Length: 436
Image (tube, rainbow, N blue to C red; front, side, top):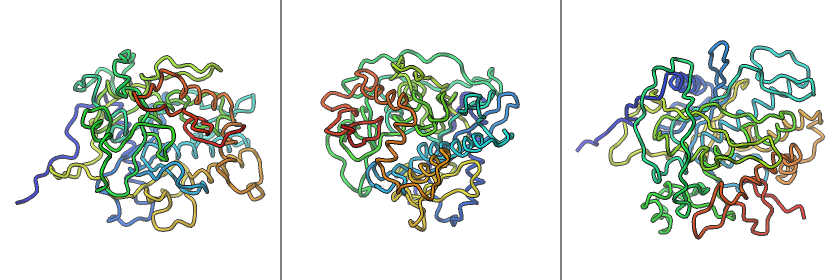
């Protein structure tokens, strides 16, 4: 008998026109950049996830994609010691790496005295730092709810999105998020999770994880964070951290003294506002770093009616994300980079490093410092971690303080927190050798 199919994305109302504009801007940019990456159409995945950072010029009411990422695979935090491969190729992480590259290049141009043209985002200050131009705001689009906590449908009642036509074409919802009732922290309501790396799709899931998924306390494909594994934090957790310390990254903090936050997050598939509020920001509500300068932000969370995946789906199989294809691009690139998400290297060759790898971003950072990259020492993870700490010790301290806070990411009963030292020193969610 013929296979039964259904729409990959059910029709949905969407929050407002701005959410739809943001989604369309991101999807159009992806369509344009697919043609630039030199990959045969047959190699593109049928199912994938797209994420993009969009800049809005408030005065002109114009939208522009600064970076985008496509992908669903990861290979673990310690899988590459050379810094030349990307260890997490989920779309949100790739888009943010592209954003960091864009901002580092833009800051370099500003610090070298270049004219602040219409395409630049940052300008040099009187103090010699850089800041985002007035009247610009940053927005994030993700075609599906981020993996991890945002996909856990417990501890809150979902509700259908009501279209807010009264917001017009340029406004986002401004209502404050409801206070989170921390009623199930023992079951992992606010806990950090990691992405599970399976050798194959047929590999059995451990019974303890399977039971948590069955009870609805854990998203499929994730595991409770223990602080000693090789896996990377889920995208829900990373986004939650960035909504506290900013999206600009550690290295740029040497030149950009104000954290860069997103004003809105627009989601396509699997949008559920109360669960997204918990995952993205409300589980760390009220956090403020003791050194000042960093505090929890609550971006407007919006659903888009714009469909990203319009290919019918097999009813029995559901959504299958087996293709390792990943892609990354940022404004200013000649072409998008096609990657293998399971190796973190280029799709058809692994001799050269992607331009958003740790090694490449470190080299870009050194050029901002005015160092001759050709004479710089060979990249090491230790040197990279040290540069991130020294770029802004307050940033490093704020991340550590966030992870060590007894309530912010309170671990589920029976599991250690992500911050447990395990004979190593933790710096944010990157583990580094002890300085003792």
